[in-house]
Length: 375
Ligand SMILES: [Zn+2]
Image 1 (cartoon, rainbow, N blue to C red):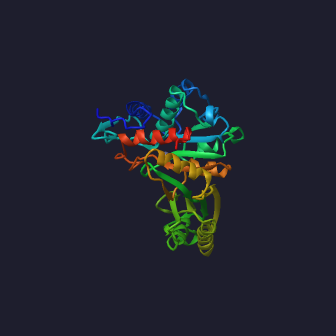
Image 2: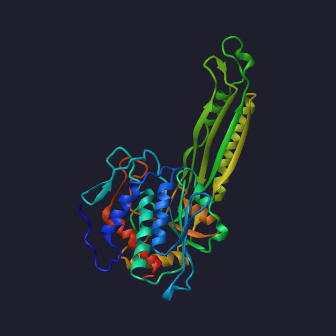
Image 3: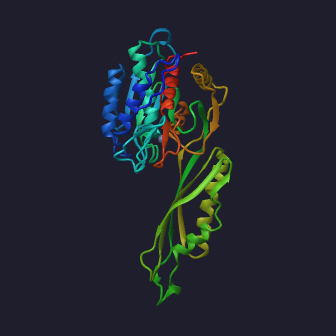
C-alpha cells in the first residue's frame, strides 16, 4: 500500500486518515440504513472527548467546548452526511497508484465518507495533541442523498453555531462553494376521463395526451447559467385499450435567482393547467420549496476564516457556485451561514468514483486548521 509521505507542517497522520476512510467505506450505509455507521461514529466521537448522541432522526450530533486560546471563539458547525447512493453495498476499496477506487461493482462512497473522515481525523488529532480548538458542533446526517432529510430533522433549537462548514463537495481541496440554488419541487396530477379506446374513444379525455401537450413546449434542462428544470417522473394509464384518466408527474426547478425560480415554476404550472384545460382535463399542480438559496458573500468572516486556514495548509482558495443542493442549503435556511468545501473526490454517484490518497489527508488537515484557527 502506497501512502503519501508526511509533509512538513502536517499534523494529521496520513496513514491513519487512509485507514479510517477505508474502514468507513466498508460499512454499508445506503440512504435510510445508516445505523451501523452512526454507531461507529458515535463511539469514535466519544473517544475524542466529544459529547455525542444519535438523535431521533438518526443523525450523529456532537458538541465540544472550545479550549485554551479559542475557548471563547464563535462556535462552528462541522457537517458531512453518512448515507451513500446505490450501488453502494459491499464496497471493496482498492488503493492503487495514489488513488482509492471501488472494485468497479459499486460506488466508492468518498461522497461523503471522505468528508466524515476529515472531521473525525481532525478531532482525533486535536484530542491527542491537546490542541486549542474553537467551540464546535458536529452533525453527521442521514438521508442527504434522498432529500436532505437528516439535516431537515436536526433539532436546530439545540445548535448554537451561526457559522457552518459542510464537507460535501466534489472539486479540488481549496474549493469553497459559497453559492447554491434554491429549489422547488413540482407535483402534478392530471385528471382526464376513462373510456374504451376502441369502442368509444370520443367519450374519453386522455390525461397522457394532456401531459404530453404540456411538456412538449415546456422549457426544461438548462434554462440559463443559474437556472435548471426537469420533469423527472411520469406515471399514468392502466391498459393499452383504455383512454388514461390519470397521470402523475414529478419534477422541479432550481435557480440561484429567486425571481427566476418563481418564474420557472410558474411557467411549468401554467402549461400543465392550461393544456389540460384545453383538452377538457384538469391539472392539480403543487409547487413546494425544497430548500432556499445559499449566497455567502466573499467578504464574509466565514470565508475569510476559511481562506486563512486553506492558505496555512499551502492551498489557494477558490470560490465557486454550484447547481445543486446539500445539507448546507438546510443550514442556511435555519440561519446558519454555511458553505460547502471541496473534498477532492470526483465522479461521485458512479462506479468510477475515486479520490487521491493525498487529498484525504489534505482535507483532514484543512479541517484541523479551521478548528484550531491556524494561520
Ligand atoms: Zn454528498
